[in-house]
Amino acid sequence: MIDLELTEEQLALQKTVREFCDGEIAPYIKEWDEKSHFDRRVFDKMADLGLLGVCIPEEYGGAGFDYISLGLVCEELEACDTFLRVAMSVHVGLNSLSVYSWGTEEQKQRYLVPQAKGEKLATFGLTEPNAGSDVVGMRSYAKRDGDDWILNGEKMWISLGDVADNFLFFCWTDLEKQKARDHRGISCFIVERSMAGFTSGTLHGKMGIKAGNTGYFSLQDVRVPKENMLGEEGEGFKIAMFSLENGRYTVASGATGVIRASRDASVAYANTREVQGQTIANFQLVKQKIAEMEADYQMAHLLWLKCGWLKNEGKPSAKAASLAKWQATTRSEKAASMAIEVHGANGYTNDYPVERYLRNCKAAVIYEGTRDIHTLMQADWALGLKKEKPARVVLPAYKAAGA
View 1 (cartoon, rainbow, N blue to C red):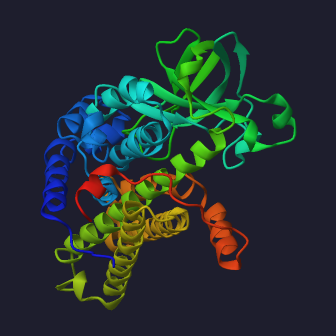
View 2: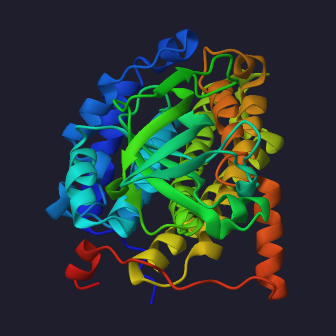
């Protein structure tokens, strides 16, 4: 049975994150956004709160919370600004949970522990200039050289790409399978920024998420030991899909925060803005917009909660993560747009946060699988053309709690 009541620990975590956002981010986010300023010190503060390892077991340096807690953190962070949640998605959802689930004990000690403590920032490298949703279209490759692998390739649109310390790098290790577009020829490696042949850069001119870092990185004859392969040779596609499911969960919970923030901003504005001798909160069409935001928030919130519950229980959750991501991001775009309309001309300026919400939320409709991809995936599940696979991992902290 699904229990929607949060524990005292989860409520305390939610309160801590909200206070962090109100005190450390909200007073500065307008300036950071205007100047496209990335402040890495923010992540040191998040690390001090245990957020960068929120659902990683304590034995590996994490805070030992569950998937619901991860969702709560993401919702609170993105209600403030998307760049905060993006960092959680790539650092925790895409990278750290993958190392925890697929890594050897040596890899966990070397990479997961400092990441969970926030001593190192981590990200995920799958997308390339010519390959996004079409994963097998990637061109990056690796060749054996004794006990090492030599890696070559370029990754694009990587969150924290120019600032992270550790990277998951997906590439072909079987060129015959590459020719056949057989994903069983893809493998995954853990790469460090300090490795010879690694370079990165920052992408400029983004529509939104301007306070965050989005970049690219390139590997030219980067030599890594065989011990840096995550999982077995040929398991890269499986790892990528596992990672993306966790990423979709964090994106869904984060987008739900955008809906809530849009609603709250609209309510505050409607209760103070006067037209024709009364506040616009009395106008029926304004009420309609706010009512739709409320309904969309509740639906999106329930969708990611269900997905988190499935993950905690060790049940298949790919379908739920896809649905939550699709609906939450679509509804966040709708809510931010309506919030601008509630604000009228004021909503078109950065004197109010709603225009930033709209610029920021558009990216989430695209990454972690476009809206179109998730539409097709949900249709395939409904038609019986796609089957869910068993969950790979249940967080021990959740099992230990006796839930």
